[in-house]
Amino acid sequence: MITIYDLAKKTGFSSTTVSKALNNYPDVSEKTKKAILQTAADMGYLPNSHAQSLSTKKSWTIGVMFSEDNEVGMKHPFFNAIIESFRKHVEKEGYDLIIASRNLRNRDTSYLEHFLYRGVDGIIVICSDPKDPQVQEMTKGNIPIVVIDMSNQNCSVVLSDNLSGAEQAINYLYSLGHTKIAHISGDPTTHAGKVRIEGYIQAMEKLGLPFNEAYLVNGGLFSIQEGKVAMGKLLDLNDPPTAVFIAGDHMAIGAMEAAKSRGIRIPEDISIVGYDDIEMARYVTPKLTTVRQDTDVLGVRSAKMLIKQIVQGKKIVTEEVIPVKLIERESCKAL
Image (cartoon, rainbow, N blue to C red):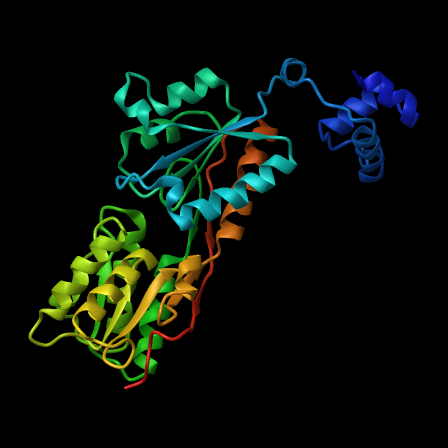
């Protein structure tokens, strides 16, 4: 078995320098780190994780929690893409992920207790419910934590600019000549649902367009089926909209199916804008115009923010808002 002493002998550096390089200490130059890491790879060196934990007083693990009532979790392409980006970055820094099972809710153990028992160095939370008591418990603690998709918390948060995203969608539809614009929202108890509703209403007011309460339909927890039901309510109106801004691509896909089932053509009869830009959005027919959330940036920024807290050994309270961008495809048409 190769040891750090073998690496020291091979590279000519001291065992202390080798250990620091392997553990990414900042007082070792990048050139030295690169030389030592390359030699370690060439010799097949495998660090002993238990020994690392004892020497660094770190477990080199990060807890992952999903807080969302529809129990989709990592099956949702938006959440999955963020976690994949996060995972790639933290693994480069030597960390592994521990994903908390929802089965914990059926036991007398909270997520925080579970993570503390496992000795994680930090926690990342994908959250849609800011009132979730389990999330509140973690954000009030002292353990390093980053929450994605939620604001105004006693911790570090990373989120997309939902207000701007809604405004971009409404402005785009207005530029195409639409004035009867509806919104299928996410549930207003969720942070994303609430802020996108605010963005929709504000954008309509700025453009001098009347707000029609019947045009604002609660689409629930962002599922395809809920999108179908919500679109059905809009199409049943005596004066249906000519365009719909929908707070999630899954709901938008469901809404498109509801329209097609009634013989309503997209975009000839009704224009649709989604939100997220999941991979499926570019393959449905017609291809979905949507607001893109940058999942790569969300994942990387969350990872850097959490690792900074872990390295400094303290919790940091900050908020970073990531810009969004409207992606034009085929689901909208000028009047």
